[in-house]
Image 1 (cartoon, rainbow, N blue to C red):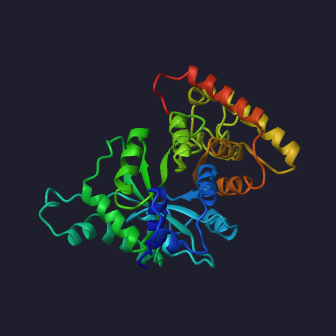
Image 2 (image 1 turned 120 degrees about the vertical axis):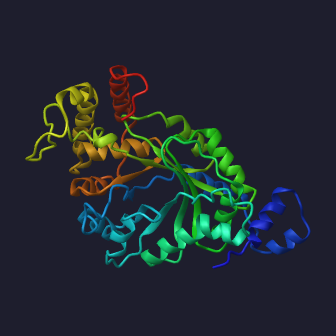
Image 3 (image 1 turned 90 degrees about the horizontal axis):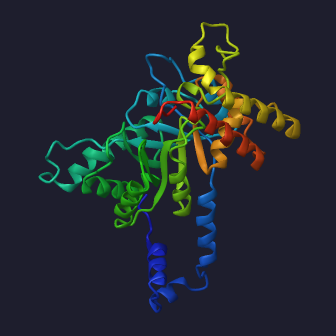
Amino acid sequence: HQRNWAAGQVLVALAAGKGGAADEEIGDDELKFEMIDALIAKSRNASEIGITTCDWHTEVYDEAPEGYKMLLDKGIDMVDVEVGSTAVTLLADVLTNDQPRYCMRLTPRPTYGFGMMLSKKLVYNWTVIHPLETTMKKLGVETAEMLMLHTEGGARMNFAFWVYDAVAEAYRNGLCNKVGLSHANADISTVKRVQDELQRRGVPLSSVRLPLSLLDRSALELVQECKRLGIQVFATTPLGRDELASGRYTASNPTGGEIAVPRFTLAQLIPLRPLHEALANVAARVRSRTEKLVGTTTITLQWVRTKGASPFCDVESEANAKAILMCQDWKLEPDEVAMLDKAADEVDKNRPAGYRG
């Protein structure tokens, strides 16, 4: 699986204004910069929907949710999974005709101060490559679609140089097709720092994974910056904390239509009423013009996509899986997006400063 870097070397030569051997190597198949620009533009506008397995635990589930299998059969095949998590066991037991594209989040193992003393190969294997290969073997894949460097919580993302070296080694050896960054509190300086570290090793930064929903829009500016850099953004918790941005749980319907004890109090739901009403109004408009059975959860996911991010949605409920399928073949109109933005602004005014949901 060793990668061939010849084409990349030619591009570097061209970018530097060098001719000679580079010109000869291109020959009749001259690389056209218009094509490269088109690919960058495509990556800036890329927006798909993926499945997250963050809350899949073997203590809760005996097998993967039915919604997961249903979406795979329908071609929704980007799957977000943490390396070494219990979700790997559940995913490995799913029998499917189509191989998922795994986006593997990996938190590099600490070296406990021995990183400078051990051999490079040992450090690479310990921090990144061995955990990655172990998970890939369990899932029965030889290459991950995406390897994401992951940091949990609000800690500052600051990896040792050998972590970037190890990621580059995994990329060169074909263990992953792309490399990304996963950090809840990422900002543009973090993204550029990681991008620079990877570029020095010949690896492009392809994506960033961060929280984004109608109830947490703090990352919108970063999403736009990433689009300008040609970096795809994956949105975690696109339905908001506890799915309160889905419009399923409202002050007038606190159980979400289920026969159950309400999950939320009126004190939690009433401040969200402007958003929930806007979601319902937009859903009604979309149903009228598309003749699709579109609900508020689908509207929420489409809002995330209009902002330039690809939502990673949990499908432990079949309702979410169906909502994902309803996102296909249509888009929100600009005035509908404006209605949702205005409602989210109104909700923000009535919540404590710094609150994210």
